[in-house]
Amino acid sequence: MRIEMASEPGNPQRPNEDYTSVALPASGDGGTLVVLDGVTPPPDEDGCVHGVPWFTARLGSALLELCTARRDLALADCLAGAVFRTAETHRPTCDLSHPRTPQATVVIARWNDKWVEHLVLSDSTLLLEHWDGSVTPVLDPRLDELPPEVSAMRREVRAMPRGSTERATAGAAYARAVEALRNAPDGDGFYTAAADPAVAARAVTGSTPRPEVSALVGLTDGATRWTETFHTGDWAALAALVRKEGPHALISRVRSSEAADPGCTAFPRGKRHDDATAVLAELAPQGL
Image (cartoon, rainbow, N blue to C red; front, side, top):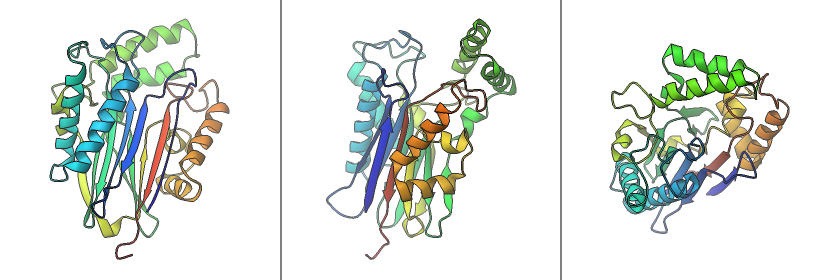
């Protein structure tokens, strides 16, 4: 089995808010892959004394432990348990009811000799590569399915000159509109893992027979820019790049594309650079 991972902050002066890890149990065939992308809050507006990197490290390690040690639990139950554990560690010191309490997008893949299970919450991505080279992307589309008026606000903001007063004002209004939809109780918004274990029931989950899967690629949206923002290649091409040259090569190419468009005009995006993480788990053919 081949495991490779890479993670790079969008700004070297700020901590990386992504998290990734892989566990391969000594007890037999199988493993667990976890990728988190911490949600950056406005300055001093999350009600937490610890911060997002602390949160993603805690949540990620709890997820990895539960998914690996409790293989009898469904992945959604593992996520619910990890969210609960993490919340309990900082409930005495932090306001977990704050709408921007630390939170993260989630990708989990867990495999044994029969199945590859998956869970995706929000806009990180899992790619299932098959032996013929085709790729099945596992996506949570809800962040891209915002109400038309909110999507229109996003397009307008990204078309405005970066650093302008006009963009700052419109961006603040757009942020408020999006916040009203984050973890909305009526099911009309989008979801991230924060302090409420119930969010795990909102995740995209499923399973694929192990013999059909040759490799897994977990990605935060900073890495999926290669496909989703810069349109350099489709999901199959992205997986092939990671298999051939490794996760570092993917992130390096994303950084080159970002540097070639510093004003975010040719390829509109919310941040010039974003934390980027990619992890590859190449599965051995069964029976070998």
